[in-house]
Image (cartoon, rainbow, N blue to C red):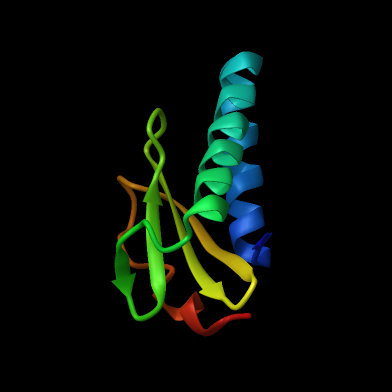
Length: 99
């Protein structure tokens, strides 16, 4: 399976990564690695994570307060949001139909 980040999800990832990088470079690298590890887990078992809304599933990161929201579309895993767990909930809902 292939993982693709929707444009806004990629922007969220880049912003979070830059924020952690500015605090401490190794923190930025740790965040990026955690997201890579999560996407690898999703790739190996895409249906393992719970459905959250419609066909959107959620994978909670273990060491950072972020959640990957994604949909399985055939052989494609589309990450629609890299959302902070303590900010506005459900802001990403309108993205669920994005491709």
